[in-house]
Length: 376
Image (cartoon, rainbow, N blue to C red):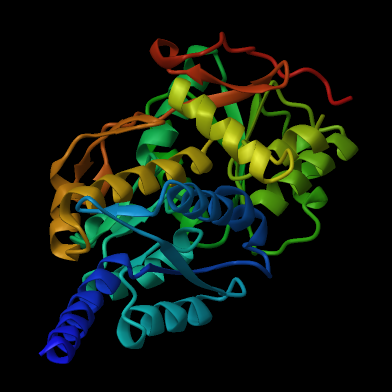
């Protein structure tokens, strides 16, 4: 009789154990990100460091809260090699055969444009911090969300600032891909009726090694402002070569990479501060950028809150993301369809070692310096 009781107790314990194990099973979070190739500069500043920091912080606190049950995060990731096909295949495997619990987005407009329909088909919510595309908004994919200000908002703010500071002429370069083409189109629309003339515009291929000929041509036209819809390597290249050829307009605006600590080095709120300090400490003094890094962390904050409330039910997560005003380190975020319509378009400027918001004036953290000093 005692033996049977003991055996029964053992069986009972074994029958409970799988349930306990299921509760403690890791939350498998998958993503593909550029670790090699031309997208690496942006991906390894604005996105993957945030993914690693988020997983580390959640696990240090006992795991991700899944409807009140703490479960460790297991990151399943790969190098997309800055290649759209590799990126798509990676996400198809993660969502299709691997059946991970959640996915995090790749870097950049092109990769997100390719992956967004796939995530929608498999019904995985995707909060993209580095995609700028009106076409993605117009596709009306219910599982895809864009965190950044989109081209119209950004270009309207930029042209408004230039007009208010009596700029009469501008020269422009743009990378020949979805990001560059959409921003160029939005900028031309924003210029209409502004009194600002576009004296030259030139596209360039990704991976360009020399922009000096077009910068010399622009210098000859002596515009009041230069605008570049550029990626990090091109932003650095255009800035260095403008200095080399003596192209020194009153306003010099470049895009992705300008907000990186690297740009400051080369060219010489409480929640946000905690994030900034934690990021800088974990990555040996490497600061987050002052633009998409914050959007990336905000996306992770939203995902964390959604899982805490709704567990790993991806439809419920999607509905929570779509229907809630989210409090994040970059302020309130609210989506209209795929677009974050709560975050206004802004222009920022490096001043005294910090990247200050200078336009619109109601959001400014510092007064605009309306004339760029000469290159040093």
